[in-house]
Amino acid sequence: MSRGRSSCALLYDHRVVTEFPIVHNKSGLSNLQSVIKNDPGVLPIFETTGVYSRVLAQFFNDLGIAYLEINPLEASIRMAGLRRQKTDRSDAIRLALLGIN
Image (tube, rainbow, N blue to C red):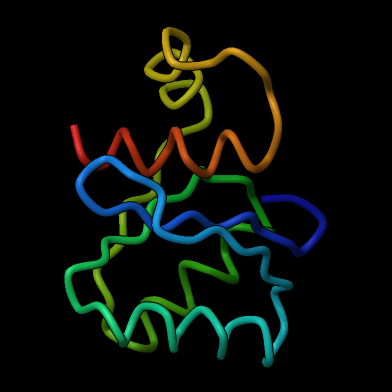
């Protein structure tokens, strides 16, 4: 998550079902909402990144959707063994895996 954008990954049974980027604007959040509403078992997970993560936290709170916000230091430590390359895409998948485990 950076500069008002997020890389999203939806996993099912430890496998990536879909990946997509969103912009933190009305249309991007609407797209995210449609993905989440289609699968009520989804638990959104993201790192706390100051102003950028506040938009997502407020979005989920407004919709009454439970989410998990992880401290970046904790996420870094927990993902250290999972990380081969550092990209927004790979981080989205690894954060999702943390939520499964």
